[in-house]
Image (cartoon, rainbow over all chains, first blue to last red; front, side, top):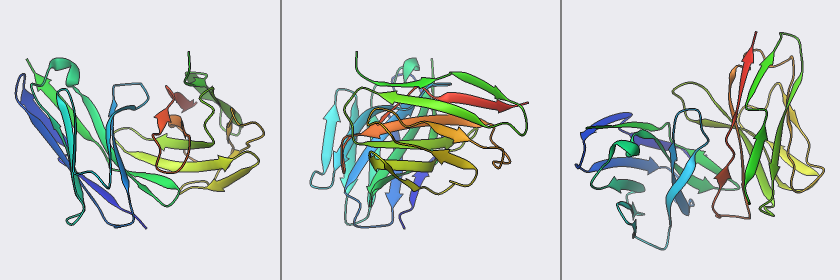
Length: 110
Length: 112
């Protein structure tokens, strides 16, 4: 079955700097890759997603890139702000289900 | 106002009791899911349903049961057979294959 790895597990950046989180997946049949942001005590919120026929997608300060050959995709956050501090999860859609990475705790230091 | 609602937000259970967590969606989504999240961990799939009156076990179904009698509702029962049920439970839905999955706000279950 599918396996999703995510790195790093924790990331601290200065406000205004960029943050990059990377995920790898194992099954080339996976074709949809969302990213979620989870604040403490709340449900995950979708922040951006990408489908396998696209290499890059941007939404203001957030971007996702996909390398199908290498089976990895990355989340890029530019000009980070304190409110970006949260846990971020990547996922891949495999079969009928989503497989999630273990999460990255991002801390943006003022 | 469309979305997924979960109730209650907090739930306390005595050992040996069954408890039921509610999940309702008004997004007209076909597929619904239940996940368990332990502190500092990712999401693990308990059960999912792609259509009314049909559901499948996920990776950690033991000690849990579900029903899908209506499209908008997918309740989860945590039975006394679940030996370590204290966790954060998340319900999610999406409208079809490879479509965006949305999450509810979660229910935190604590066993006393």
